[in-house]
Amino acid sequence: MNLKLELSSEVAAALDARSPVVALETTIVSHGFPPGEGAKVAREAEDRVRAAGAVPATVGVVDGTIRVGLAEDELDRFSQTPEARKVGPRDLAACAIQGALGATTVGGTLAVCRAAGIGFMATGGLGGVHRGFARSLDVSADLAELARVQALVVASGAKSLLDVPATAELLETLGIPVLGWRADDLPLFYRADGGPPVSARVESALEAAEIAQLHWQLGRHSALVLARPSVVSLDVEPLIEEGLREAERSGARGQAVTPFVLAYLHKASGGRTLAVNRQLVADNAELAAEVAVAFAGLV
Image (cartoon, rainbow, N blue to C red; front, side, top):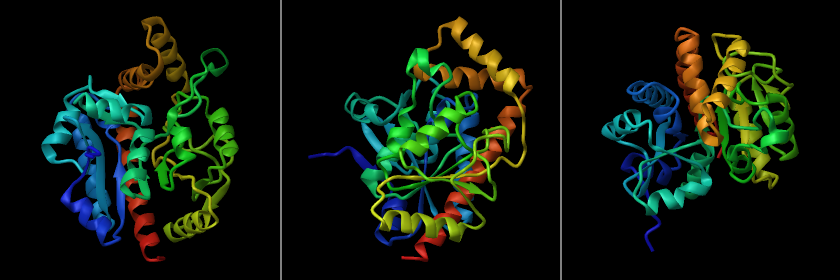
């Protein structure tokens, strides 16, 4: 049976050799940046992974195949196709069978990591509990996937348009360690601090790798989140509130809310949030590679 899962030769060789591999998502390529910008961000993230000694594995669904490791022209295609499907864990099979172009979310990418045997991932921000949850019951599938996949995910906290305290509470309920990269609090994506306390602070890539190793040796089959604060801190809470109100007025719902609000923030901030987003994606990719390399030295 064709599982419709295809690894690039580089990724396959690295996994066969038990070399460090870092997965990267494609939702940020198609939906997180203006058309054409996402490919530049993706290439920078891949370059940072390679410079740190690991192999990048950017994930997406292309013409009926779930691809792990994308070619240059495929990154460009995702970047120029904002209408690409936003593919979470539930959507992978349908997207592949129907031959659509699918940009994977954190949760969708983690599901592919589980199938491919990849234990490290980097992203910008996690999905989580949306504001107004009591009315909408809107919770990202990222959290459920974090609870079932053995991977360490480097992110700058949850997306700041979410209910971050509620997201942190749910992560705790699911038993997912949230490690602070040289920080005691969960970063608020654009803002480097101000979130709830993390479950533990770590000071080095080796320390993070050792915690992940023992977590899994103890039979905990969940992910760990390594929360890395952004180097440049922006407090854009008033703009987020404006963006959410505008999204509601425009009728954006469910998966459409995040890209709508991100685009609003990029425009309303004069491009400042765009610059911070781009930098933190690359920085997080580098850190994920450093932890993956440290982990490879343990086993």
